[in-house]
Image (cartoon, rainbow, N blue to C red; front, side):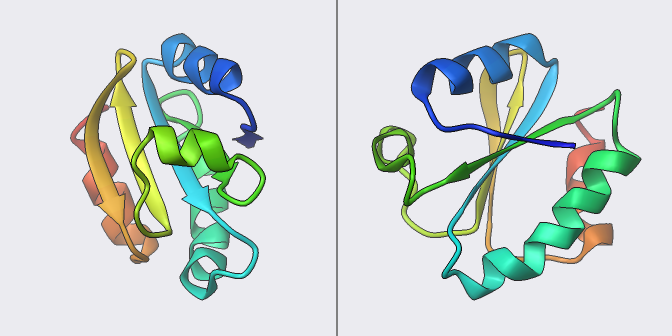
Length: 105
């Protein structure tokens, strides 16, 4: 399951309440974001209990995206213990995403 995040408070709570959290910054009009959506959905099921997935629509939460210095989408920020540990920019295969996230589990 992917939690839709639309506020700074919701964002802060999400990354603090989950040991490993991945936040996907995306938009409806973004082609690569549409490619990543089913991959992230699948990963959220496969990695449930280990990694929590959230999503921020940059059009709906523009100030939140700006506060996180999102320059291009899709951008996934990985948080461990509430701290940013990695940024994954652009689309990638499910296997590649799983490999990149496995080092934090």
